[in-house]
Image 1 (cartoon, chains in turn brown, red):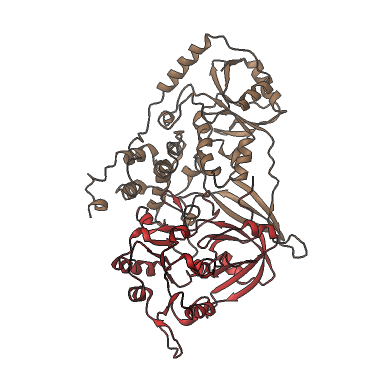
Image 2 (tube, chains in turn red, blue):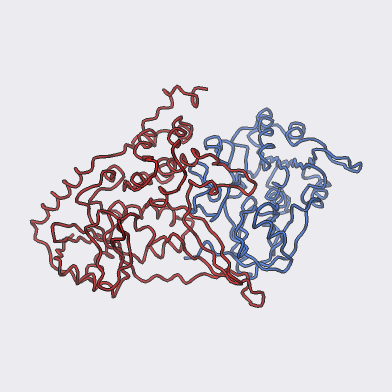
Length: 357
Length: 281
């Protein structure tokens, strides 16, 4: 695939140009952090941003999303009949997606787009979007993407991968969608072939800047019940306050709640991000709760990402190694440590209450 | 692409109060659009999401049988926000239904087999559907002996009383109707808890005999050892589970037991499947 060189001037011009064909999102400085925002005229994505506080998950899957509208007006023919909200998506482009966040979309897709059921809201937004990635030249201390199915130059989930080298950017289109985006931006200057080896150097340097990892190789060979009954869950959950931060900042957490909101005689049915950390998530109307205690909820989160997903899809873990949950957890719960415990757990040799009785 | 969250509009055609304490009502729904009824192709054991705009949705087992045409029925226990609202609704009112959802009882496997249906309390709805399906003249010859053990606290708490007494008259189904206790001198069926009656009345286990159990956890807990003693293998014990649900189609993430979703992979599981799963239900 040919490599396109983008100098500073054509970068700015290209971004302005694509705004007529796409709704363009990119990282923008917000207080102390960066967030993905819809870029206005003359607003540029900040390619110097290490990574955004939240992943671009919400562009495809909003935190709150209206699904239907309804009327409770008895004089109307459509009283109490759900009506679909208009769900036609114009083309969107997300600029500056880091490879870890990009991998989250194909992971989440397995949930929203299965052979049996297609979540029309997620799929339409996803299909309308071009993912323009930006390779990481250096990692954060909490990054472990290279052991979570991708890497700082990973391409899965992306339509274009951009690589920054000083003031210049190089762009490689990965899909036909990516090709169209580069054309729409008017970027046509082919890079010199000598750049290839420079990029290889950047990639190697980036990969070696990652100094943490998770081992997941032995998880698949253990049974669900062995790991579920492992003795370490209560201890790991001791400090957890079930705040749900890990869920909200996670690019691969997809659970939602559905709620009706009525104002006067009309209303909306909406879905909102939800979290397995919350007791209400599984609370039966009878009062019974299958995950009543906080360690059961913490166990659910990690078992889902590192075991249930692995067994169900046979396609790696439901984690991309972005490290957000590690950085933002108020009580320092670390998925890398829990993954290590799960991977190295040996039910046979464990002499403990949970398994010896 | 069809929106799987969009309910079919239905009209409440009839409401029947089933139990003496009025906590259980059966709602008979008719589809507003006949084409929707054609799409709602179901088998006994599946469930639907009853959808009331402004209140929410609830997963409820389908109590009617595919052998009954022109309507679908759900028997609902008044317990939470949506069910309480539904219990106050009137015949003729409009609401929504999504489905059918989940897997039915394994009817292909059950063909040519003896079936013992064991139910307790209000968990008899999909079992009613199953009995109607089995007794349908087009289906009865596909199955061998049918036993039904159904118990409630008292005679007034039994569901579908008229149908129960009609089935009890038949010679192609063995009905064992029981109550925990009663002072009704006219009570002509059995007295005793479901596990005890199962011990006395259920046929012995064999490769050709399957048990379908739906009931409160306490009933299941005490019935299971009885079936073990009778020689039922775990593959031949079929159960239907419940968990809190929203989407009903395996996407929203809350009803999982291990890697299985009760909504999409269940609600019907064999006991051998359940033994491999965490007890998160």
